Image 1 (cartoon, rainbow, N blue to C red):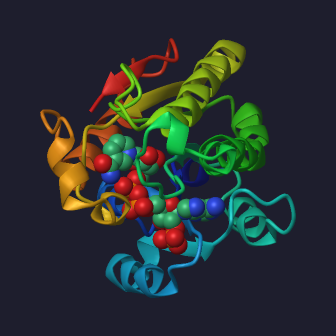
Image 2: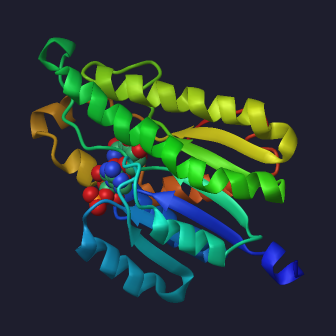
Length: 238
Ligand SMILES: NC(=O)c1ccc[n+]([C@@H]2O[C@H](COP(=O)([O-])OP(=O)(O)OC[C@H]3O[C@@H](n4cnc5c(N)ncnc54)[C@H](OP(=O)(O)O)[C@@H]3O)[C@@H](O)[C@H]2O)c1
């Protein structure tokens, strides 16, 4: 394999059209990565991001929770064979925080499906290439509202805890094969996810750890480039 291909870095980012995801795509392109950004339905946001990022990124509509038809991603991965791959499990279902007695089991299912099953399916597509290349990174995007859990976030915190556990398992099982895995826990960010929350709810939140999505994206990119990050499946407050 030529050095040119081995030197290529590819970041596969889910939730690419969202508040944090779009900043991650911009930051990783700036950082010299080729970006493959996945989104669910927001074609207009994807087209705008694609225009901004040009040849540095490919935006692909892919529901990460479904079993069938990942051909689009598989083709893109094959074209980038031999590159160093980073997977960022950033997508989450939207939700409105509410007390446990007002939550429905379906709220738990939906958040688990996108945050955990989606991350598992996505990583499953890329991991064999990481194993073959003896290198790669997996990053799970959690939340500062998970640990300690904030009131109203029971379903969200449960899903993020499972994703936390997944990042640790990946580190444990594949660390010796050169694959690093860690999670990041951002504070509150103004994004389409939180825009839907009422003023009353937003005022009640602990905003001490508020962040700009661009600031969080920059920190995640630094961590991905840090050779010491992800050796122990650790979590980083960002
Ligand atoms: N905002 C905050 O305060 C905050 C704080 C801490 C952590 N986080 C975490 O940061 C991450 C990004 O959050 P955000 O605020 O940027 O959310 P957001 O703006 O709502 O973006 C969510 C993204 O996920 C995509 N998505 C949802 N379901 C999907 C599916 N089944 N398949 C593929 N893509 C899917 C959406 O695609 P479409 O646009 O096409 O629908 C969108 O790109 C999440 O993991 C969230 O939990 C957020």
